[in-house]
Picture 1 (cartoon, rainbow, N blue to C red):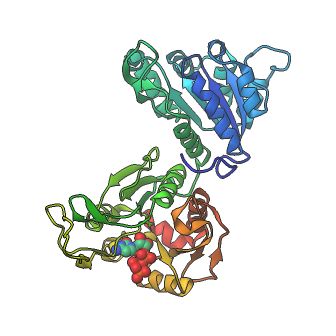
Picture 2 (picture 1 turned 45 degrees about the vertical axis):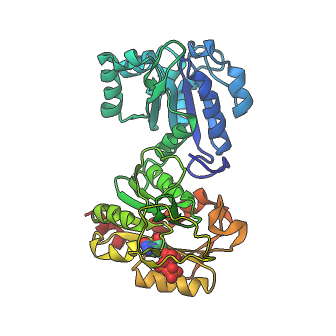
Picture 3 (picture 1 turned 135 degrees about the horizontal axis):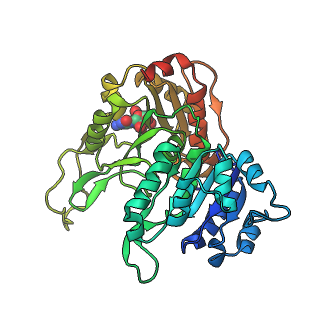
Length: 417
Ligand code: CTP
């Protein structure tokens, strides 16, 4: 994930049991507890006996402000496992060692964490972390498959990379805490309206080559589209993100197709749009490209004070793929303007057949659309414009999806047929 760690949907005011078992990755679970807490969740950490060899309860207590639990049989622990399990909105085990996974798959209840797993009916996220040979063993494969396929647990990771000191590299690393936060977010959104839907999002700038080292582009960062992709995935969607050049990391769970030019973006969208139930055009596509990209680097001409590059019109991705849209698909566009914001946004919405348009001012508060935050107005074919205050892009993404969620069900329900 990215963006500010401030209380927000879907973590805000939710109860999360974070189980920690005894692997070296336990040190990263301290950051996970901190991040979830900063996002507004109430985090109850449960350590296995093995985990206490790697991390202390005090570290977690200082970050969550809540008592850490380790013992099944203690004076205040009586029935704690039941209470924790019943009250949890999600349970996340990070790291989940091979032993913890085996015990969970066998239905054991020999410590507070496994007992809580049996008591809860909340969604469970398991984040495996172990040596690559242990991970590859058929016992572990079978146990994980059982947890996933039979019990409906989400298995997040492992990642591939350097393991503990002396162990080399391979699959077995625990996911990084920001990625686990997203998986927990998806678990918290379990019944979200986008569950199982196909969502297609364009984002970022395009780069139109002038010569092998130069391009015509714009200041778009891709942050808005990446925030939308994260939010849609958390709400259960299968997300395809067609992204122009950005330095942003691929959001977990999202299929990202990287493109450079408007024509490449058009091809990628044309391929994916017939299957999409929701399409969001958040990219800042260059309307023009150099008519002829030079094959060699343009040299400075000493005798000439100017250089002209002829531009030619690019395809309009949203407009040109209009006939390919799935019947009933809901389509969102963006409008970036310097003048006459709402009138022009409305015209674009009609011309490009959008169900919703996100209008923003190039010189708006907070630096306009180019920063971490933005102030936008949501405009639909009917109803008054909804002006949103300056807010982080992650929250704008939630607001856009909320509008789709609340939109008339008639058109959207057709989208799934
Ligand atoms: N868009 C697109 N392909 C283009 C230009 C725009 O898909 N070549 C999409 C954008 O992603 C956005 C919407 O169309 O959702 C409007 O984009 P914007 O650049 O504001 O408007 P334009 O239609 O390009 O009009 P103008 O440049 O005249 O403002």
